[in-house]
Length: 214
Length: 214
Image (cartoon, rainbow over all chains, first blue to last red; front, side, top):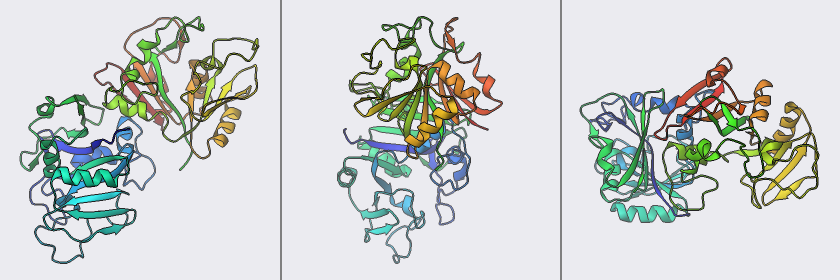
């Protein structure tokens, strides 16, 4: 099996906004309400952060339970790790993700300010200043033959798309326009020169966009 | 994790027909064209019988690649094993499935004419005359904590539904009426007293029905 580079469960508004401006500790998505963006995932039985029993078992449950399937490493931007900009004041900040982050693999965090590796539960964060190609090479090696997930945020995902390093991508489009924020695209169709695009809208009202290379 | 009883990738026409009359060796689905019923699955990259590269990576690929996830045993009716009715003339017939059947688990075949166990590749077929409850008990034990798939055909699936033994079910509805054959239901909504029902129609034109217990 060839290793693939996948994006899964990335969420944007109808006008392509994946996160608001002005990220803070209290608001990882800035001026955007995260529940609006991925409430569909939280409703499913297999949602990674679900602690209650129950949840839906429709098609969106297939999507959430696919999050970890055959993934051996994740790449994320620094702002998916935390809100701090510039040099780290100290090493106290250990990410948004708690003591058992939901990745369970090596995670490569892109930053202009590298710091020592950080292991929390089954996840080890590696911090590096590198190009998308260099980062992917390290992640592929760490993934041990499994696929690599590009976790976002918007800026990181755009960099990997611009470098044409993505093989498959799932983006959930929330049916509201947000107007301002970090924008992934104007509309999904801008990528159809390079990707097949399938759009499916289950009763949640979310339009799930599936891309795979032409 | 509780063991669940699941139906996956079961295919019927818009009027609920899952197989035609007059099954023969050459026509496992009788007078129904199997390509009509599960062409959608064959188009996906993860289809279990795919040998060519390529295939789609949209939502239906999530569905086909979920076929084996956490499944520890399958239960099927005799006519999913083969076309022979009544006593076995000999043991020469070894199923429709070739030397490496796509199940890779114990498979329990319901028949009024039990015969010795048959191992092909990673699959062992056990033949038994038993009620749905008794069969499920054996399959649950054999599944080693994993889920049990009810594989069909129509008659077997109806028996397990009538006995209220199904926890989750995915049925793909092909948008053509067939008129005659083995019928699962008049319409999917007949089961909504017991199940949540979500319907999703991707560009293939197939309506995927997902049921889970209320």
